[in-house]
Image (tube, rainbow, N blue to C red):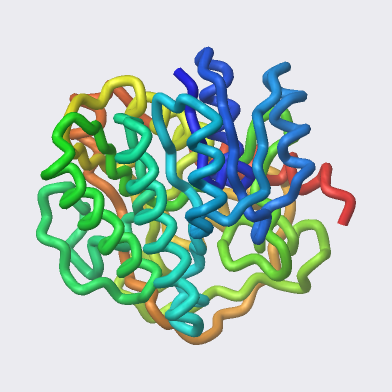
Length: 331
């Protein structure tokens, strides 16, 4: 299939481009490079031996997207394009609502206009709010705890309503948990611009000496050690989940959790990283971060049954691969 990957130069998008190319698909990428780098496209080519078509365009630019769709016959769209930091979304709600919701509207409109029937949406476990774990796809969505999560709920509703009146379209809403790690080659990984918002790249920067110490946001949650618990999964497993969804979804809307089904606390992840890589990580406990919840992990039985997808890589691989990638970076 010929697939458009919106946000394909980003962390999850780039790994998904690799998985798509290795599965025999052709790929076009549209990305504004706000939180990614153009060099990533060359790394994708080094890994796969195949190039992607690239457009440096913001997905909210409807006129530019119209031109791209008119020049290709896409079989499917995978939508990663969006701002993604929970804490930042609390501080910058308007930017998050505009970017994340308008990008979904524009892509859905293009799919309707150009007859693109397959649409895979990068949703998030944040849509569950402070529900009881493990999170199950059939749960009613409570009020989310941050604007980022709200943008994902809104986008899901837009796509559900879209599918109601465009019933030949196949839409997958993939609610995934906490991707970490990097491609085993060390050529692709999470390399955010500026100070990292996510835990693993902050940890690897501390290990490298780029950051002085890790900040752990809160140790007074009702969890195993007081720190937040999350369902960490390898980014390559996550990428393969997108390919499975793209290949298998039928007409209608399909919702799947992508995770391991296991919760790991922040301090447990720190310990796993230290043991996997033989490096001590200095850290300090600071106050809770706005918008965070105590626990977040998935029930993954539905995706295993319907798509045949399960996460294969363990926490040790996630930690080793992330550190291998960080060591390759020049700064």
